[in-house]
Length: 311
Image (cartoon, rainbow, N blue to C red; front, top):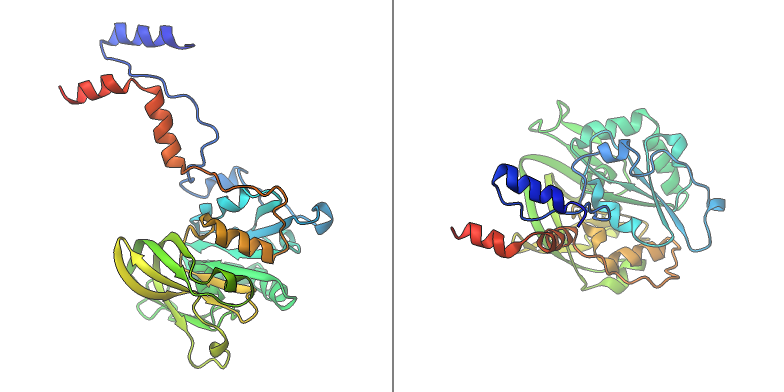
């Protein structure tokens, strides 16, 4: 072992047992704590792609890099698929003409919605949707896709009501209590790519302060329905409808983070964008925390550790 002498010296000089040396684990996908990873270019930022730069069957997905972005590791599973290009954009110019736009979670939905409008990204998303583009919103992004966001108790801002992007006929009301749960949900089906997934179980988590429901006064509300039913929150059985999807299946959103970890849903949606899984890649990714635990266990003298704990 390269550091065997160092281990011996440490033990001799300190009188404290050295139980092992954990190697550098560069391939682990432990979620980053905050958006610094984007700023440091771990993820492509404001890199514009053209369809000419893509091979047949590859897709380009633009995630809007909101100033107060949250849970952006939601999209790491997309990066693992061959032929899927995920990039983060923070300007209209960088948006280009992707196959899909994703609005991620936000620590302050109303502030980030104002930012979208100020930079012209809100208009760009509208134009993209009008051309038939796919638009997805997760948590805060889902709230933005709705018709109106109400904040009567000023949980997020001094404004009591703000117009949403108007791409889904739903409304959100902010509440002071935050919903935080590990969650299990059942896909209820839906148009186009969602139909074959009816009854499929997916797993994820919720962390949000808003409550979103169909806007009954909107004439298009009848054409949009929830596509998820949350059946378990933190090991407690529930029946909570979640999400909305447009009649053509192009525009959809929900509150469930970690959604793209579910391989069947992930690949069904990607296929609807024109993605081809030519390598027929298997979903063999190990949970990163399990991989970390395995690496630490193999590197340490566990028998000696247990003996110390029992002293």
